[in-house]
Structure formats: structure tokens, C-alpha cells
Length: 455
Image (cartoon, rainbow, N blue to C red):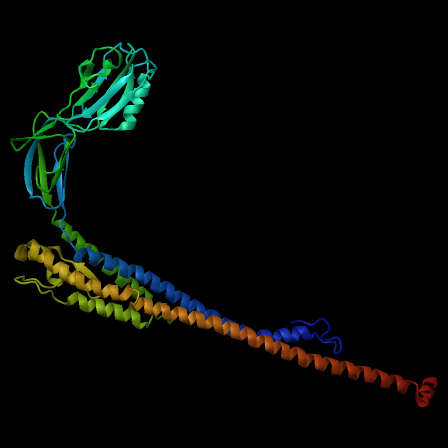
């Protein structure tokens, strides 16, 4: 709050003096606020990074807690078939030979019956059906063209689509069944009969149409047994398997269905990697540099110690799986190093698999993984340890912001007080100077002063 006339009476730059006094009060406090805010923001960022690492460990533990062995199926020739499993199929091998693929029927009007798509077809009614399905009725009026009939069929649906093909001899109406299978044949009746005269609308009757593609079932041989299907997908032939036929084969191809038990080993190794990443990060966040005598952003923070302690305790707790020799992760090959990290001992894991079998080992992993996941959820959940610590830090930032506002209010009052004091001083100095000038003028006009001046 600068005043332009301040200092006129005294000749001093009182605005500068007031500003310097205010800054002397403001700068140290703002620097202290800045340091505290910087440290708190760094801690919040560090806890954010820590949360990401804990979430990665929790993700690995979630895989262990809900571990389910996936089943895969491989075909020796993928051009013949594609086989997928829902996980319930029996493991093993079988042979597959595809003799015939399913296909949909196509029929067409006879060549030379229509000059082009705009040729009139004659009036009447068409009834079109596929297999044993319900027939659709198409009313054809005088002057309707082949194009009009095509459009009416496509709009009606009914399991058949229509198109017009120009083959050099004129336009031909082609009808295609939308579903494959030997029973899905197309029937076209004109005015109630399929054997109408080959003239007018009767040219579209079934007896006057040419079959351009036969309706066929798929025929496959599985381990010597012949299987037929109206589609090229065998979804209930072998329980748990979906077989999509792609092409015919002159000889059988081999299909292998198996479970990859190495998935459990890979899941455990993934947990070890994520756990070690978390340990490395906590060590970095709490490190102390003896040369600079400075700690890291979270050195001495009890939250980090709590996370490491609770995870470590959960890691060594045994499972309660009946009849299993191994009950801990250490006995499954996850061993602790001196620096707090973990290592995976493949040989120990293999021995546990041989002794207890895959099912028991999987049960052990699920139990311990689920228990440890509950621990990590307690760190990062809405009411978790990290969130509580972060909320406290954000509250500290809000308090610093309030302290800044309070400082500004106090400095404004201080400035007002200083300006008032210096204004009064400036006025007093100006009055004293004015009085001094008056007295000097009076003294200069006295006789003694004039006589002295003549000499």
C-alpha cells in the first residue's frame, strides 16, 4: 500500500522503508512455507508411487489367490480346424478328418429369362421358405421388375437373401439361404404351386430354378467316428471343446488338449518380481546418505516400516492344506534373501510338485495368496494405511495454505500501521522544517542580524 506523498516532508523514501520492513517479515516465513510444501508434496508423490508398486504386488497375489489352470488345444494343421477349450475337457489327443464342409444352398433363375434388372416379372404372389421354416409372402404387382422382387425379398427376410447377377445372357435372380445344412433348402411357390409354368412370375417357381450350390451338412471323422453337423461349428460333439471346421483334409490331423502346469511356476515368479520391485522402492524412499547426511523423502516414516513388516509376516504364515507336506511359500521355492528380497528356487518347487502333486500345491498357493492379498488391500483401500497417511499430508498442505492467508492479513495490517506511523512522523518533520524556516526568516530580519551583515 504505497502512498505517493509519503516522505515529502522528511525527504526520505519512506515507501521503500515500509516495503523493506514488510519483506523482512514476509520472506523468511514464505521460504519456510515453501520448504514445508515442497517436502509434503514430495512425500505425497512418493506415496503415490508406492501405491502403484503395492497394487502390482496385489495384482500378482490376486492371480495366485484365484489361480485356475487354463487348458489349450492345438491342431496340427490350422487350415483344417480351430479348436478351443472351456477348461472342462479331458486332456489327451484325438484325430480329426474333415470330409465335407457345411454350405448353404443357392438357386437362380434360368439363363436368358430376363434381359436386365428392369425387366418385368409378371403379377402374382411368391411364397418363399427355407427348410421347414415359415414361409414369407411377396406380393408382386403389374409392372414390378426383377429389381423390385429382389428388394422385396431382402426386406422380408425369412432366411433367404436375393441378389441379381448378370452372366452375359441377361440378369438372373439368385437366392441364397442364410443358414448352412442339407435340410435348409429353398422352396419358392408361385400362386400356391412350385411347379408353375415357365412364364411370367412362374419363372421364379422352384421347378424352374437352377441349383447353383447344394445345401450340405459338414461331415467329419473323429477317432474313426463319423459326425455330421448342419454348421461348420461342432460345439457339443466333444464335451468342453468347440471345433470350428475350416477346410477339408485328405487324411486325419492331430488335436492335442492339455493343461500347461508351468503357468503356476510363472505366476509365482511374477509375484517374486513384483515383491522385489516393492522392496527396492521402499529401500530407495527410506535411504540415508552418510556423505551428505541427508535422508530420502520418506526416511524414518513409520508407514513404510508397517508395510514391510506386515507383508513379511504374511509371507511366512503357513497354509492349512490337509495331507500336504509343504505348507509355506518357502517350501514351494520362494525363499528370502539377506536384503529382504525374494528368490525363486525352481528345484525346490519341482520337489514340492512331485511330493504333494499339482492340486495340493495349487491349493497352498491360493490360500497364502488370498491371505496376502487381504494385507495389500489394507494398504491401498479407501481406509488403507497409505490413503490415511496421504490424507494427513494433504491436510497439512491445507493448513499451510491457511497460514499463508493469515500471514497476508497480518502483513496488510502491519503495513497499514507502519504507513500511519511514518505519515505522522513525516508530517511532524515537515512541520518542524516549516517552523525552522520561519524562525530563520525572523532572525534574519532582526537589527542585530542586519548590522552584522553591513560590517
